[in-house]
Amino acid sequence: MPLKVGLTGGIGSGKSVVARIFENLGVPVYYADQAAKDLYTKDPELKKSVIEHFGEESYVEGELNKKYISSIVFSSPEKLELLNSLVHPATIKDAERWLSAQTTPYALKEAALIFESGSHRDLDMVIGVFAPAYLRIKRVMARDNIPEEEIRKRMNNQIEDRIKMKLCDFMITNDEKKLLIPQVLAIHEKILSLPPSSSLPL
Image (cartoon, rainbow, N blue to C red; front, top):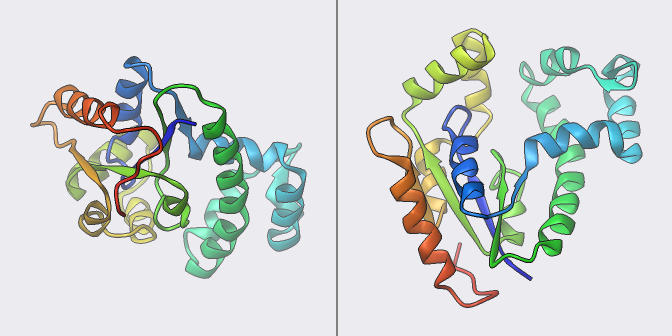
């Protein structure tokens, strides 16, 4: 079984960009956010639970009504916590199955809420991607075309970045000043030098 390595960072930190660099090095990556989106449709139990708690309007023609769900959960911490309590167990289970099937020395699980969801307990180590808040907001505004206030709401639902980075075993700085590839290569070599199934204390 490969080493199971988490890759996390706040919204707009650029963790997906970092994940693609690892993929270019031959490291398989499980994208938890995309997997969760798929599970909302493909996992019958999850779909049933979402409808039970958020109503029939949660789905339109069998697909998750993202606009409807977002309007509820990003204005209510309690509703967001409820939604996460439904989707996180399904995603953690799916990721565990996927990670166990990989045959490389290590595999990555890319997810924004690795610590918030408790899934770090099932990983051998975690890599954090850090970017200053102003840069994260600028990136998300450009990428998603949503107002700053909405982005800050989402950021407030995640562990503060500097605290999150202290929980990680490795940190990559993505501030458009430090080059990403050398940082990724250094961590890649370090992980490859570890014995199989070893883990760093979290």
